[in-house]
Image (cartoon, rainbow, N blue to C red):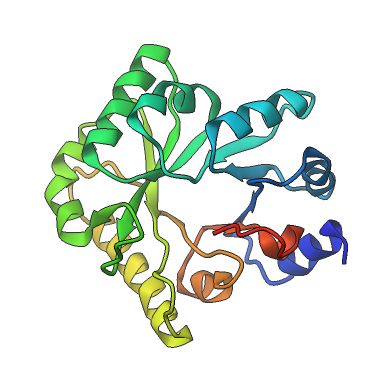
Length: 222
């Protein structure tokens, strides 16, 4: 199947409220152009150096929205703020505050998703739910960045029912946060990948991150 066919097949299942991001880690630029040709404008990268090289090769496509979905180290914050429109993997208050300071210096306002560990998972970064609640006042003090919502990745090995419940817990957390007075966090939910995007959508995902289902299974996009 072609990339265009894969994208159109996925789109038939998508509500208008859901944004499709193509995860393009290790995907050749030629294949990214194929995705662009059928309407994809959101591209997700995990590595800053790889993203920079692709941005140079795709400079003629000026309406691409670039998303960072990989773990962000503090020594790469400035470059990330310079080249990404969205940063989905903000996993601590310290990192968020650093991004906010750098964004202020650079006079830019990237969209931020706060990475939350809904369930204990030693393989994931992010706030636990109690940590997130405790940090909400300081999170809301960040004024330069646009805190657009939450990002969540379920642990490996969950059943379909458990995965569904995971996404529903993330949605419920988002709703609860939105009801807090003075909290400066919007309601985007970045969740759902190639193997679990349908339960994520049914639970209320607004951004799904798809790689192998679009470009082929030879790469691990997780």
